[in-house]
Image (cartoon, rainbow, N blue to C red; front, side):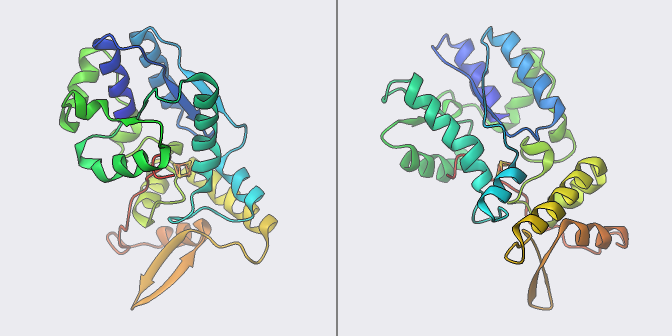
Length: 244
Ligand code: SF4
C-alpha cells in the first residue's frame, strides 16, 4: 500500500515517474484489481516485470527453500528484474522510490546502501504522509484497499504467503484462505522431494527451549487439532525486496 500511496503522491504533485510491479505469479487476485485502479487514477501504465518463475520454482532451482535469512525468491523475482530494468531504462542518478515511511527508516537506509549509487527516496517521508492517512487517501481517489489488509496482513505480497513469515501469518493464511494454504503445502512437499534430504522447511516452533522445523503439512495438522489460543502467534513477514 505504501508503494501505491507513493504513486498517488507522485501523480498528485505532478512528478515525472514510472510505476514498476515485479510479479511473483502467486499474487492475490485483488492485487491486480488494485494495480488496475492505480493505473486508471494515475493515467500511467504499470511496467510489469515477470521472471516467469514462482518462489517455489526458485527454491527448487537454487536447491534451498527460502527462509527468514535467505529469501532468494525476492532477489530473483524482484530485485534482479528491477535492477535490470533500471539499468536499461533509467539514468544512474534517477531515484528509486520505495513505499516506506518514517517508521521504516532502518529499511530505507539499508536500501540506500544496497542500491547505491542510485539514490533511494521515500516520497511518503518527503510529503509527510503517515500510515493512518493511507485509507483516507485511497478513498479520496475512489480506490478500494487491497483485501489482504482487511484480513489482518501487514503486507500485500504473495497472497499472504511468505517464506520469511512465522506461525502467526500461516495460521491466518490457513484460516482465511485454505485453498492458498493447500497450494503452498503441496508445493512444499514437491520442492522437498525434488531438493532431497538437504531441504529444510522455513517454519520454526520452540517448545520448552527446543526449536524445531515444521513443514506446512505438519503445521496444518497442528492447526486442525488446535484448541483456541494453543499455538503462539509468532512473527509476521516480510522485508521483501527492499532488504536485498
Ligand atoms: S513475499 Fe516472501 S515469498 Fe514472496 S517473494 Fe517476497 S520474500 Fe519471497
